Length: 465
Image (cartoon, rainbow, N blue to C red; front, side):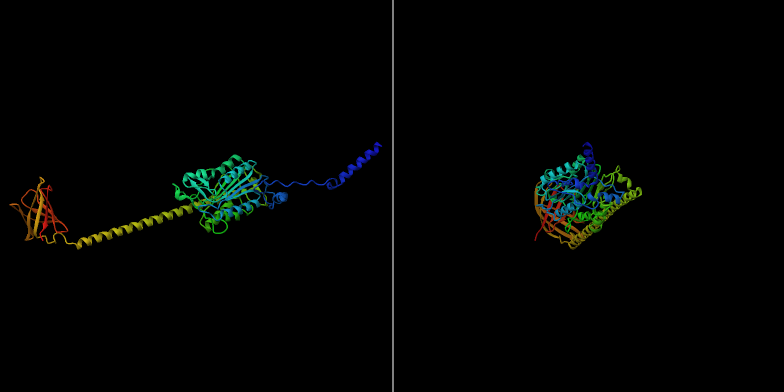
């Protein structure tokens, strides 16, 4: 009996080994991954998830990164003051593109201050799980005393000091990333539209300020260069976001080259020059060769697959592009200074011409008026005068001209005085036997206004009509 039992066990064991699993038990149903409320799950893209092994086999030089990709995307358009047309469109299209690139996206449209602050805090908490973090903002951005602020919808900013309390300090994004210590972060700011509150601000800085440093492993891109204003765009997207959406989709392009292409496109088409700040220690690919997701650092296997000569060439190209941009800005500044100098010289020439014309008019006016010598001053005058001691006197005077000299005869009370003289310049100088002469000037109304006794006494001769 015991031997029969042993035989039965052996037969059952053999059947189990030969039978497919589906004959023994139904395969367990794999639960769907949990999707957090308000977040967009990453879309399936070629080379990820189910096809990951096949892609890795086809491209042995690409190491697929297992880390998550997290993005916070904010677009603010509906401002009560200086509303913008494209930021919500930009944010929506960016969120869709990032989702296709494997990012788990939190999208906020026309967010107020509380919504932005809570979203940034949640973004920082999710980054603590590791992976790649990306923050994108489109809307009004302003700088105050070198600090950049992102302006929420509904912000009541009446003066410069309100910004600290009613806008979001962009530095908080970097702080959250630094606290998360997740390794690699990307910050994209399409926020350099002109300051809508500039008329009420003490400072007149335009655009955004470029931060001097960032946490290691951070890449920051501004839609235009320091202190400049970016365009909102005439179509659905801003020029910066439109170019970025295009070049993010190209496989096997390092992030530095993506933004180099964006910069070249914008400078050629609009004159706008995006600006980057990077503390990356390796390359990041939105879509690496083979379609998988990969992040490169110096310690990763992928870093070893890049050829040193290729890396050096890319760095040289980026350095040349930066030098080219610096030369372009220097040339533009030189042209501006030359234009200002030419304008100053033109104004100076016009001023000199105006002064010459004024001098000619004054000369012509003087020449058209008769001089004192040309006026008919001979005749009879009433005399009023003041003595050196302050007493006054009155009398009459007869003025004649004989042999080119003027003769004056005063009748003051019972006394008679005589004197002779001529014009010296515009003044009639008469010597009358005293230490000091009498000096007259001829007024427009024909009176002779004089002084005597060295200027201590005065005398006025009024013609008798």
